[in-house]
Figure 1: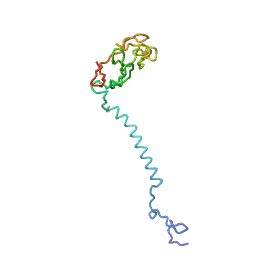
Figure 2: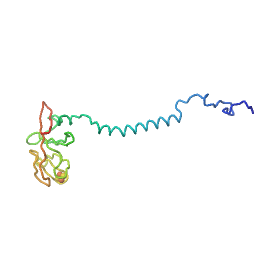
Figure 3: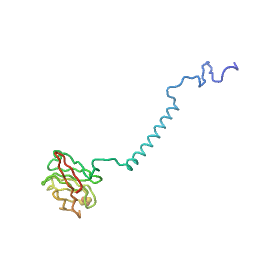
Figure 4: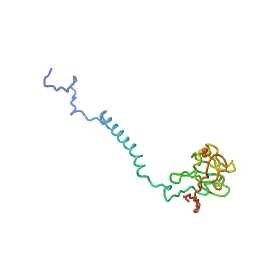
Length: 166
Ligand code: FES
């Protein structure tokens, strides 16, 4: 055997010295490093993004001056209602017998979100324990709710219906 032969040469005489090998396009080690780096950075972003969102809340239309666009007049059809959010508060906007009105959508009994029920008088109904409120003024008509729903001010500008804190 030739003593001058390098240790890296194989039996077939192929050069196996790492420095002389052609670089692989993406070695397994490099691929795993990239994968771990991507995984670690994704984890950091996924953890920090909600924290940053909590500490620096963005401005939404709901947060501007206690007023929210509930929709167009055409979208709030007579005999229907919809729940929108005014800041953190759900508000039900109804187009009942006396026109478009807005009330707190949180039932005064135990806090369930109320809904407009055209089939029942019409009323605003709490689905949890059968509380009924008037769609005219938010007063309690039936059931366990102890107090009326708070009314919010509605203003109509051109075709847009806005709800704001009174
Ligand atoms: S939560 Fe509405 S009736 Fe009980």
